Image (cartoon, rainbow over all chains, first blue to last red; front, side):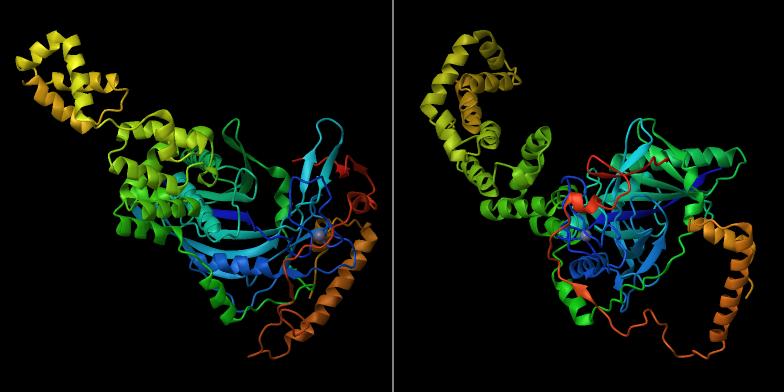
Length: 476
Length: 95
Ligand SMILES: [Zn+2]
């Protein structure tokens, strides 16, 4: 039988506020353990949480950016469970009336736009960190992270493959970064993903029993964990067995998911309304003000780039993945007046150099103005496109502009016909056999002569002139 | 409303509480009485009354996103029954 995977994702994204969600402790990590805490976030008796307005507004901004509706009244709830990294014995989260409901995110699969619906976006607090000491019978707890604002973004089970899951996560990350509410860096642990995976016979409307895969920490691993889970469940179903509803973890070294049996009872969280926090009811006018702070989002930008600059869909998609990249491109396009050429250099040489160094565009030594400057030199015939690659690499290494690099290294294109004729003469003299063959009708040898002349000129001869003069001199 | 002894045991286990047999029976009885008392409220006609989220009729109590001083590590750990290397030390967590 053919099975169809049904996947829903829960994403936890840390908000980049200055302080924690219910206290004024700074949300800085990498600091010494337990130096970013106060009586509120370590759960001392008698303290009261006070909600961070920015955390609420960032969540609303995310809801608006994903086409969701903002609940006119929202409230917090206690989720009760015991774990050493949760000092109060409960997590302040949201259950009924989350801040946002019913949005969607668009992804592109096989050239088709697909909508992944969002069930809800709610706000909650993060837990601390446990360190498991090797040997010894103890674990260590650092509460610096406890109380960091987290957004939980829950999708509908609209995802049908691991590729779609990966596209969805990338798009969500891109949106969060565009609107500046989260770093959304999976490797740093501030963008975490749980996946609910089930199978059903193709064409069936009913859902099968699902397994929840928790805490997968990279895009690649999410894809691999889902693929493994799909295979595992298909094998069970084909063998006539039944999938057990359970929580599973992904072992990235073995590439398998395994059951996390110990937490079965912990699912009874006994949610109840948080008595220490009053309801949140953001006035409509304020919601509209927040809406106005949302910049052009990746999908809209991609469409505009394709339309306004005549870029292919693929290029427009690549250039809009981050806001920094998109801004960089627009600046280079504006300064040079050559959007297609600017895009080609960014997608080609620049991407190659940055990739090799594992660097982002934000720290690139080449500015958009420098790209425009180089394109002007090519356009004016000062350097050839071939030489430009050398110039570009040197610009990247030294941070000097194209004019300076060309001057320093003597890379100016040779467009003096006398000089080029002389080089051609030398090349012809050195290759009398090929000259005779060419004259006898072997036209294909022209390429050979072009290569020789360019080599002799150290790549600096103007290629158009070389072509033209070669044809002329060879046929004399 | 009746509550069973099994339910009391379950809730106690979730709350990490332990009671001797006799006390469990006493609590089952008391909790049943409390729940029966709560049922009185069900007699009220609440048609057209919005659900209450909080006993206080106020909204939007929020603070600005401005940092304040934190506790020192020493102060934070002062009441911890066990500590090591600047951390709270707890019995080994088995995953
Ligand atoms: Zn704090």
